[in-house]
Amino acid sequence: MMYFIVLGFALFVYMSFWFFVSLVRKRNDVVDIAWGLGFIFLSWVSYFAFGKMGFLATVTNILVTIWGFRLALHIYQRNLGKPEDFRYLAWRKEWGKWFYIRSYFQVYILQGLFLYLIILPVLVINNNYSNTINILGILGIVVWIIGFYFEAVGDWQLDKFIKNPVNKGKIMKQGLWKYTRHPNYFGEVTLWWGIWLLALSLPYGFFTIIGPLTITFLILKVSGIPMLEKKMQENKEFQDYAKRTSVFFPLPPQK
Image 1 (cartoon, rainbow, N blue to C red):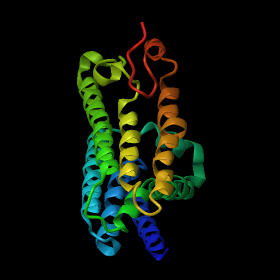
Image 2 (cartoon, helix red, strand yellow):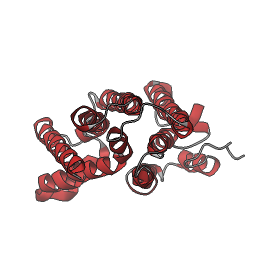
Image 3 (cartoon, rainbow, N blue to C red):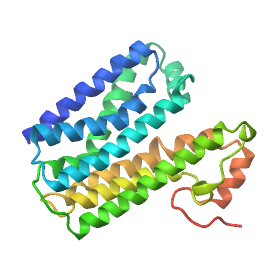
């Protein structure tokens, strides 16, 4: 139990640090960069300070690091030279005099809590020595690769589309976006189910299903797809695109 308490405190300090960064930078969307890096931070803290450093843990932490670093770099480059993200700008106006207090607890501490729940499979893996990867682990790596492909390639395709001035005001409908309206979100959810499969055969591994369930719920019902689609719902091109294209799972487009 002390293992999880100490890691929870470490994450609390980490998210508090990023809150102070946001005060200096005067923009709350730095938390989106902190998100991916936070998984890397907590993974390696648990690995070196408390973990058993087995082969399974090493592979898992490398996968988390690849994902977290790519995501943080992508968000940093996306936000560079641009105003604060529309979500945080809206909250800045809506929260008024309570902005800083609500930002600390509702943006940083709350996201830290979600991060902690999602990363539970990794923490359990790091706390169990295992020098082998069984068939479930191999399946988990395959699922992770599929998820990472959809997230990374989806982000790259969208970024390339947006940077082309010819596409200004248009909806991305090519590449992976032809089969799902949110390939990057599908990928993020999928790769965390892959991480859970890596933990599944370990003691208490099944109960870390709370991790992939949390990210699935957040993406599908809270801050992922619902917020983005609400922003786009008045766009007639998007309305037509939505009628033909799966919202989440990659499927052949309807005619």
